[in-house]
Image (cartoon, rainbow, N blue to C red; front, side, top):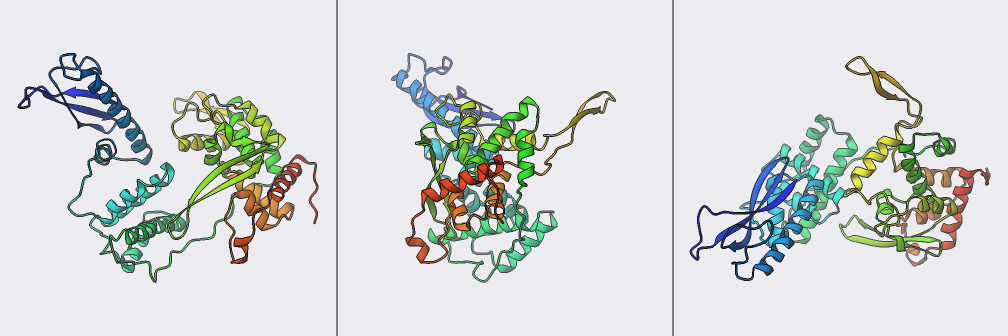
Length: 413
């Protein structure tokens, strides 16, 4: 991916100057974006010719534009934009030009809604928009009804998507309708008497024995950092891996780690909570091994732009931990590594499931206390809204779970 200025000298403006464009080039092709600037001649690298009036200011502005375009391109790469959507995003975010389509479809509104979300969530909404476009590219906010939703569901299941995957996409569509109604874009609401079905999924947790085996397994050196990150997530009360990667160094004070979680409730409203969990000695030992140089708590993102790519690589690494051997490759030579994983279905989120399962099943810690450790909202009734969380209970629960895994506490039955 590269972005660079281009002066179109094929035809001069009425005042004798030439328009400046930015060429955006990537693996999908290239396109031009008008920079809204003119020049009397060719640029010298990224600098306007000195013969231009205010050439220094124009050079500075060009640098700002290129940096902003680079930022939008990276965001578009994460979300999965095609060059048409990317050009529209650049025009809107960098130059403030709003493209008003003649008639917006449902998939258009889903893409628009995705722009308000964080990178991973935005990607999921983009996938939903693609699925809606594939099923009915002409669908609008006013044309969708319960029959349309049923048809969409059957089509996606026919495409091989699991029931819960379809449920997530229908939930995304519902969120867009809730947003559209709040914004006054439609009065139609096809979900009024429509239920979205999900299958109950089994928590992807592992046993205490398996957790200890993973912790102590003599894995390859390149896998060790991923095991450490998994164990750190577990020691920190099953902290969400993305939240852990985003933590700054100053988030840790007085033996505790505080961070902010932002979630969207059923009404589509953003709920922001500050979560504080104890940093036990086992966690501190890992944190010290992976100090960041860029102000973060950990160094895993120092050379990366995407949390998603790190977590995908981490999951693959964890699922390769175990005995390995060389086998024949396609050329008949023994140089292909075949892995026999000890935990073939593990992911980074398994740490969160495992913490909760051990706390509940092995140590009989209350569901409310576990919910406080995980940072869940637990207001099931009016009374609970008047009760403050007790940090001492969180600290005690985390210490008990970590000690139990370390073998210093015995579960009571």
